[in-house]
Length: 427
Image (cartoon, rainbow, N blue to C red; front, side, top):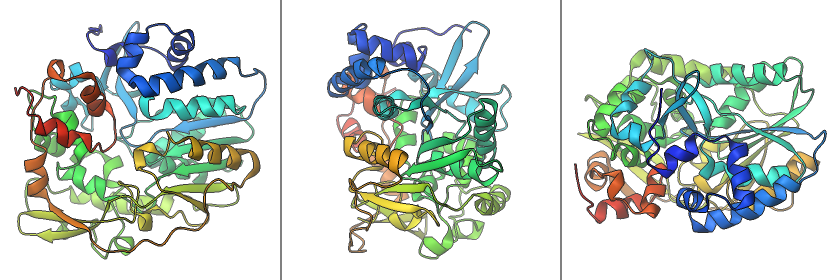
């Protein structure tokens, strides 16, 4: 199956990580890479790529780097070509997001890690002397299944003791792998912003008000965010398994269908029941398990059922996506950084702390005690208000490069409000 190459994202999506790193190091395809990464990140990545290529080869400790939810590209692999759906703007514009629903008529598979969020950390770890490989996974599916596939890969590659660095949902996949690691091949795990007890962002995904969903679906000329939520997100086990657990979510039992508004955007009761049981199959932490938690950023920490939908309460107790109260990994050692969820993998100080943890099992670069933050609601917003604020349709061709990058970034982006406010051409 051929894929037209009309956008920078399509061209980059066809390349391997090694090819992108080589282009960065040589300064080739500069216009393409600047358009994809942005000028500032491009210059930083060029420096890192040159250093990474010069890093001494040989036997090094293996590190598997896992992305978060929506951080792996998904699509089909043919005999001679690749067709990317998530996150290819042309496929989205053609209405192909609905093909991501489960069960899928034609099996979709993970293709690669979306590089804008993870290439900097990947290169920093290589420079530090680690043998780093990306491990993309199908974030639509159960973290238990993804954990089994990760452990099978580790076993197949015959690595005796490996480390895992995992962002967001990837940390749950790592816990699932650890739970069945009978031969103790997994030596260390470093989580970054993992919702160990859930995140309200996934409630918003099912309600079609999650900013990441709406900004991507704004490119879709055929479907509304509500249609994508009902037909795609409602069918994905991975979404349900990241819902907040009641004891840590101000007593709203979101695994009980009665706790949800009675409308067309309610979840599936059977999938809720199955997801509730999955949490018991994830491993607690042990020696060598760490979690770097983002904090002091406006985050949804409460949901209130109202007539006509949910109302979301924001405090400063989280990283913008994961509340601090839902981040704790029992049995693991925790460190804290005042950083946004999507930037935990791009912060050089956090990268240096990760390197310390992998080398020495400790770090002084981040505090091990969480800073006290007043648990006061600073803002309330409803489903209806979010739909009004994030309702524009846009055409990829009409967007400047900086706004294209915001669309493609698989994390909540405050810049999307500015896209809507500028009222680009609609379709």
